[in-house]
Length: 484
Image (tube, rainbow, N blue to C red; front, side, top):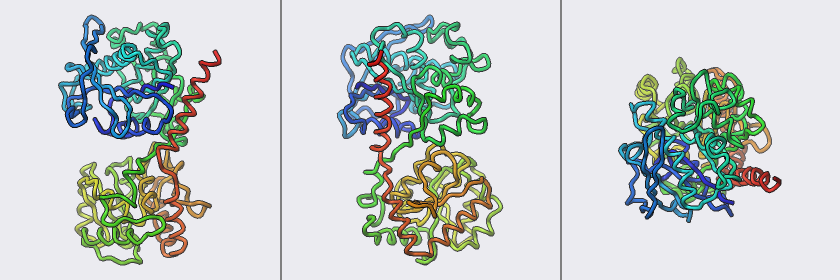
């Protein structure tokens, strides 16, 4: 099976958000598949560091509207694999910027960039004779791929048996613009400007097109796949998602279990394992020393590693200063975000003994909190997948989560069998604090707490599990070709 991934960003070459993590990790675990990854050659990518080489005779001329654009192709290996990553070069659209998503660029120009990239991907697949069984597009930046395959390329013999999977990582960014952008793309308006195509209130919505034209639509957890079909979670295209519910699936992202491994992690002060938890106590003591808090083994440490924003539930803390100060636990927060929230927690840090906030991001400190905290609080308003709870559990730190998105799918709340954390349902301060107090109460039941820790550390968080589900989906799509 041949699988082609197309993405605006790929870890480690270019990373802004979780999209890069997925496209840089998932392909490594798709065994018995021949994979090619295509991404733009952004100006911020270090060619020398990653051994990116130009491919001879790769010049490609493509027409968009009345203009012609020239592309070149470069190649490197995804680190620690034999997977080819192809970098589409075009100085006009990508090479001239030192970031993946430049600020303050013209909106039409931004759409042109990704239309050009998407069409170049299809033409380079042909040039390389890489005939894909599956094209896996991601977010609005490559939502043009399923649209192209069902319109301009529908009679193309090269892509005759190609199926398209479309992944939604960020539903809020849908890629909307005026319909004259279709002239640039070379897609006739009469073929797509309707609600079951790309049209959204008279404009083009590329994400809507990706959903309508893809053979499968994937999002990052089963529960989130349900939530986005509701008016509350659907970002105004819930109707489109409901219409396509028959092909919508949710698959939880994995984490890199080599990077997040308490037995080998070089960023924490003492390694430990499920069999020997002594090192975890040393990690906790280190945090108390670093942040000048009074260590008490009988007092739990609650950690948070998060962007400080309402989405992540930080608005629930407003007005809780007295309750936080008096609770029988310590709170340590690492993250940056909205200035009013940073200022609030900075002031709280200076005026209390049991609360500390570090409003700068540090990967080393993040891992240390995952390893040294007893509990990990995630009171998110919405959380499509969430990886922090998986990382925390890997280190024996029990998550306290609000039931939403992937948090519902990955955390089994105490006292259920095989519990690996704690849950609260309603998005309000009282429910959050009740959930925290309940966890603190169980913490003092040492045998029960140790059992919960070992349950959390036994959970399989790896990409291997997620990849198996993706492979099943790919095979199902390919089997349709064999039946025809």
